[in-house]
Image: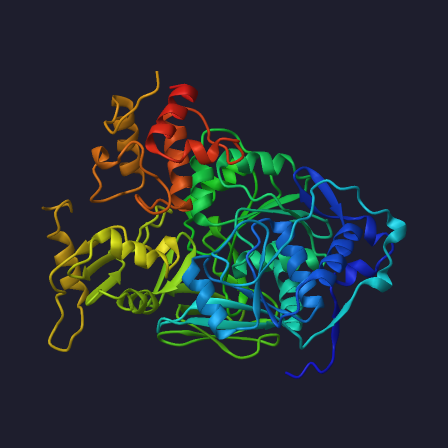
Length: 463
Length: 93
């Protein structure tokens, strides 16, 4: 749909209200950051960014990512969000978008690409309210290309998913609907997920920028880190996480602070794990369903084993082997490899996933992609990466397995080469060197033959 | 007195066993983890998912919790030897 020259304010409609400048929009290292401070940081950063059409935002710190992204949008630079930080992924993107620089906040890379380093001190004095003028909040044209998120395609090339400013802003309204734990209450998101993937990008960066919530910029890893990040965040606070993290948190010994709600996504969650997490945190666990192409599109309360409930803007059509997703703010129909069963016009159940897709600890890749990259390694004559089993439903991580024919190479050499090309989550564990693969006459690799070959490896159960 | 050399101490072997079983490192025997080889990155190839699962396993077995902002975190997780020494100092069970 042609949105014409409709513009959206960089900091959302909430920034135009009286007193908006004084509101806390982020927490960093125990210090609140006001909207006035965020705007000042964005404007100052925008003035310093080097002149390129594209920017690879690989900032580790969430506040740096937030400011860097907003500054880039203001300057009309398209933010490229890589699927992984491995050198191969960055280099591949830079090849397709040559007028690019790296936006970093720490050491990264070998200097092959130009870099701009962002460093904003934590705990600087907040700007006074008097210096915040809603008229200074920039208006951004809706049709401006704001970001491109990359996903794993089936042919060995990363697939670009372009997002206009309009799509991101309207998506953020949907996400706020999914996140909001209490009606008409401000809340702060505490997230274990990175800012560069769609789930974290939508639910920690865009929602904050658009004023739907505040964000805790500390990104906790271990249960003790989560405890301290929550304690450092005023209530109401919402935990944004994944099943891998939720499992570790639910099983950890110490108590966790109460939260008002938990949102979990990127991989299937069992009702059992959801119940454990609800007991641990004293809050309802909602699951979000979506993908990079469409963003979050449906939610459900997992413990009730409910069907998925579509968010307002989305409609879906079920097909035998895929699902079509429509939403006004998306550039085109999204085809998902998941198979669903509609319950009614607004609700559905998830039946299964396409076989090309592998999901490990919430990261998604195409097996076709992983295999193409394995075979691209010089010295590898033949090989296959596959999933020996489905991920354990209670969150136990299952990794890929690989058989490789590479005479003259050691296992370590193959892994070292793979490590440059694919996200560490998908590195095979184990990787076996073999003399040949059990290909059929038509050159296919039947799954049964692979499992049989696996069972015959030394160290596998049954040998 | 700090352990030196390439031979695992008894506790290092115990901890190596916890690592291989908690992380399902098939094809890696506990005694194969060289005490002073890097745990993360290239050699054994552990990643951040492993860090999380390992932290949980350590907390359950040894009764204390790891923290990301421990100033020595890079050193603690650098090798089996460093991790073993950190766990022994902090364990409550």
